[in-house]
Length: 143
Length: 124
Image (cartoon, each protein chain N blue to C red):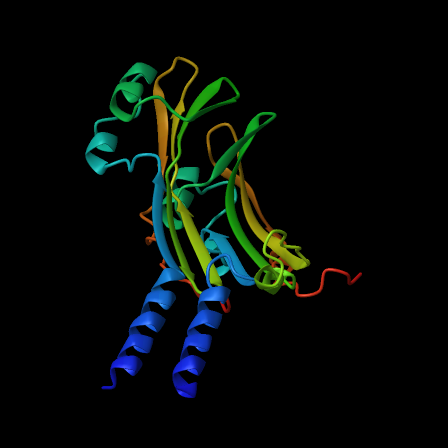
C-alpha cells in the first residue's frame, strides 16, 4: 500500500509541476540564424536583392532610407525561466495563494542588414549580433 | 498485473498527458507559385497584383517606389511538463512597383523548412 501511495505522490508531483506549475523553462525562436558562410556569395555593387532572397529566403522587413532601402533578416531567440516558491502554499491556505516568484530571461537577436540602392542592387551588408543576451536567468538580483 | 498498479500507471499516464500541449498556428496565406507566375515584371499593375495576392498587409514607400509586403508566419509550439518551446518561421513576399505602379521586381525567398515541433528548450 505504501508503494501505491508513493506512486500516487509521484504522479501528483508531476501533475503539480506540469503546465502552469511552479517551475517552467520557456523558449521562443523566430527563424534560423544566418551565418557568414551563407552570405559569402553577395558581391557589393553586383548582387540583386532578389538573388539574396533566393539564397537566404525573403527578408522580414524593408526599411526606407534616403535614396536606398535596407532589407532586414531577423532572428530572435528568447529564453525565460520562472519559479514560484509560494505555489505549494495553496494546499495549506485555501482562500489566498501568496506568490513568491523569481524569474528571468533574455531575448537575443541577430539581424542581417542588406542595404540596396534604388535599383535594388546590394551596396553593403552587416550583421548585428546580440545572441548572447538570450539565456535562462535563475537569479534576477545579480548586477 | 496487479489492478492497483494498473490504476497507478493509467493515472500517471493521464497526468503526464494533462501537462502536454502541442500547438500549430499560421498567419497569412502561403503564396503559391501559380499566382506568382501570373505576375509579370514590367506589365502587371498594382490592381492586378492585389487581385491575385489580395491587399498587402503593409505598404512601404522607397524613392517613389511602392513595395507591397505580404506576411506569412508558421508557428509550432510544444509544452511538456515544465518545458516549453515555440518555433516561428517567417516567409514574407515583397512586390516592388515603379513610379507608374507597374511591377518592377518580386522578392520571394526560397522555401524555408517548416519549424520543428519541440518542447526541449535547451541546446541549439
